[in-house]
Length: 277
Ligand code: ADP
Image (cartoon, rainbow, N blue to C red; front, top):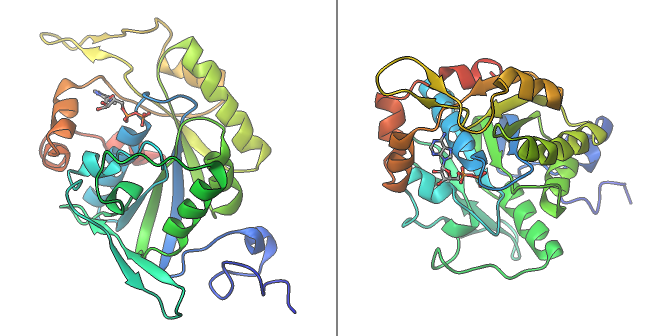
């Protein structure tokens, strides 16, 4: 019996180096897999995932999004596709299934538990191993096709799912999301140290909710901290990818499921991916 015989990725992975222990998508070919993570909830990790996906599409890349925040999924609402359902198709073998992701208006392929359950308010009350199993399946059994980028919106913190994604998924890199508050940075640093311990490369940090733009001048008003985004990034020991303002129009467009129109027409988010692609 070969050492690959019991592996979930058998036949779809490379057997070179540590890729042997990694899970690979069965129905797709993905050039880069990027995890977006933060230590704390509510700092804008899902927002940064969505904005990055849209900017990549604007630049002509094919993009998928895996909503790995199983208990708090928000990507369907971000893209305004919460009323659609991902199809569950039979696999080649009797016990196998495949997921057909839902496409956003701009063609982003999205898979989320909220696209697989009947109602979006339905909670999942599962223990860690079940959640991990579902996430593995959503990653490996989705029909991703050819993708330049798969972005993974990870749940906050250093728990079970973060560990699964960092250990089992063949990540190209991580983007860390933080807000300008010392308490948040301290918790975010735990994620940074975790990634370093697990040898996962980090592209850098996005400081979200950095400032509010003055309505009548160019001044950036920093609401949470007098420290600059560079200083916050320095504390984390990471390059600063971008600092994003608090943007009421952005929030409103997300609430209304119209974020794609807003991003494509008005919002310039180019700086965020400059250091990623
Ligand atoms: P997380 O994924 O870290 O829990 P979210 O991306 O869901 O955080 O953001 C939390 C809330 O803050 C959402 O309601 C979102 O619309 C809002 N939000 C996030 N970033 C911004 C921003 N830069 N400007 C305005 N609202 C934002």
